[in-house]
Figure 1 (cartoon, rainbow, N blue to C red):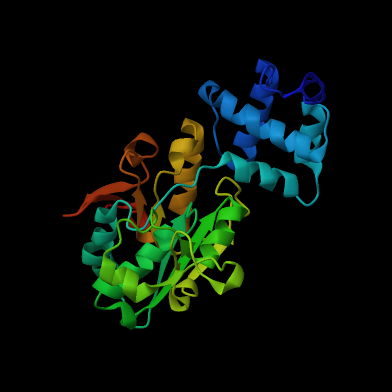
Figure 2 (cartoon, helix red, strand yellow):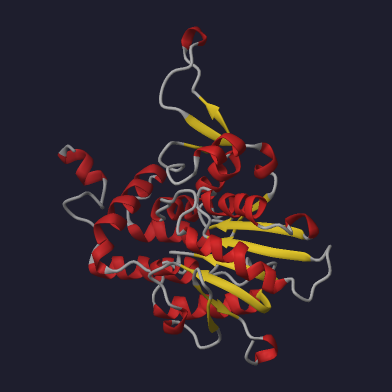
Length: 304
């Protein structure tokens, strides 16, 4: 980068955010999104803020913060959030929890429900869609009572760009690495980018079939915003895996309380393998199943 461009960019690599500015920005992002950025993430944050400031032409952080706070459409905050989130996942990730869902949890949930009742499953922090689509495949393949109930699959993320990719449902080999060949053949169709002359070359990609794409309701949701999660009520199972590791302790406690409100009595929440609800909240009861440990909302505040 030339000297002239460094001068024009107050967040060049040699400068970066001042400690005060970094603290101000991180506090703002934590308040608006629940995401917590420590000092160890300073370089990561500096580069992305610098890119957005340059893109919108704001000369200093104060002007950029005003844009983030007061832009009516919220478009710039969404663009920054999209840059700040990490969305690396694949099909059948932490499959033992999916096994637990179809071998134990769902049968327990419908024990006293007549056929035709509704079951609501929410993938919170769904990224590019591998998790909710994996849930759909597991239900179709391994839960014998799938046709007896009205199953509603909800999926949400704070990143609008990854939600567009999730709705499109096109994946590369890496995303499908844990998927058995017979399931790939059954639920995916090969896609190759067209080339001049009509030839289709390049790395193969796969698109999930339309029936599964239409079975998941994707929505843009910031779980730190009470208004945006108001519609998530009466949920039977929540998958929130490896999302809360990006929150601070207060943010995790607030998220746990929100999920508690969203769950139906006796509903379950699944966390990532490195996460423990007991460190966040005492509202839930840990349940040990043959495949996994999940956390349950007690019925009427009592022991399930």
